[in-house]
Length: 522
Image 1 (cartoon, rainbow, N blue to C red):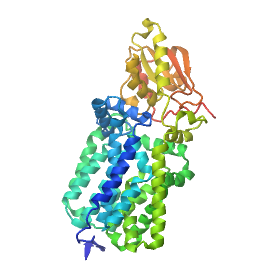
Image 2: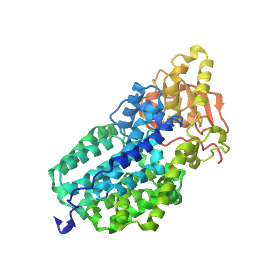
Image 3: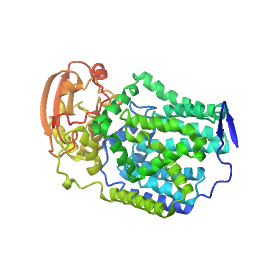
Image 4: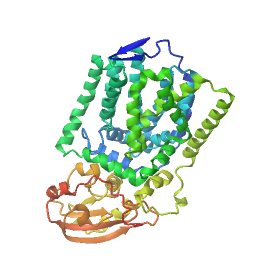
């Protein structure tokens, strides 16, 4: 049976009843993974970005300079229900990771796979380093990966069923994802291009497709209005993210980075890609090829972060598992598959059990931005106690008359978020920062002519203004500390800015991450 799509005949997806869903096997995989991930969910100290999400949640908005409003909203909700709990803060990331595990099996079933390929697909996703990373901390990518996969699954299911409510649901999921990250309109457009090129073009003629597209477009209106009102900071973020990723790994290290996030299970991803291009059963889903190619191109060619393509992992794992099962494993295949599965599981369990390493095992200082990611993965974020304690002690040593009306201004948004979150208990005043999204949370009042500045560079250069008086009060410089948090940081007392804060703040704002390593190892 073929479906006529313009000038191209595309075979319809099989219309026979799908195999039974492997509830028992997939539930076991998902439950074991969830238990492992939950057992270590609070082992990492709260991260700088997580502190930033909490701060953003305390400044509710329809959009932010570097993300949508959904993750800050979840952070605010967790802080309301369980203040200070990293477990509550990270539960959404864990839930979305488990959902991606189950979704891998659901996609395998949609491709016609029985219990074995469904279980393999679920296990493959559950044991990737990406799943371990996705579940470890609250992040935008933790939600975006799964939402992108859900979107792909809804369109895959439509090809088989032609149920138009799936297209509306796809538009709704894309609209929700747009409140997390702003890549989804590109993905939606590329999916439409894929349908136009490979079929089934009937999808684009359905009113439900355009209703789903309208939901996505409507969800963008408040965000676009905010961006317009604030000078379109998101337009600059793409280049900044690319520069940060290249500084972390470098373009030539991208293949190794992909291996690190896929582990041995990356072999099944490659099988899924091969099957998607060669096996007849996957021909109705060729419209997904441009989306996968776009993600790989963004990562490999342009040096963007590996999770840009991770939304395709559930579908590729499913395709690979179904393809191998259809060909028959045989004795040798079963042995090889068992070895690969055992290796991926062992790596996953080792990552969960071992990481983060104790701070006492840290021997090498972090002198370059490229080391920050590995430092964060191996040992976790650190230095918040030193930062808050030192700033609080310095603040309380200032004479009371000088503290009247004083505010804190930090160079780095991580510093601001930490002092904002932990500083209230230490009696610290309001905190501002011109860095990243923090610069849009608010401007120091013009009456605040005295500030306690915390940063890695001198206040005049960092804030792009001059003060009538600046006094260096103290340093925070733990040799093995975290750059920009408790290493290479200085605290200054500054008074008499040459311009009101309302006038100098727009020029002081900067979106790049001030990482703090520029003072070391150069």
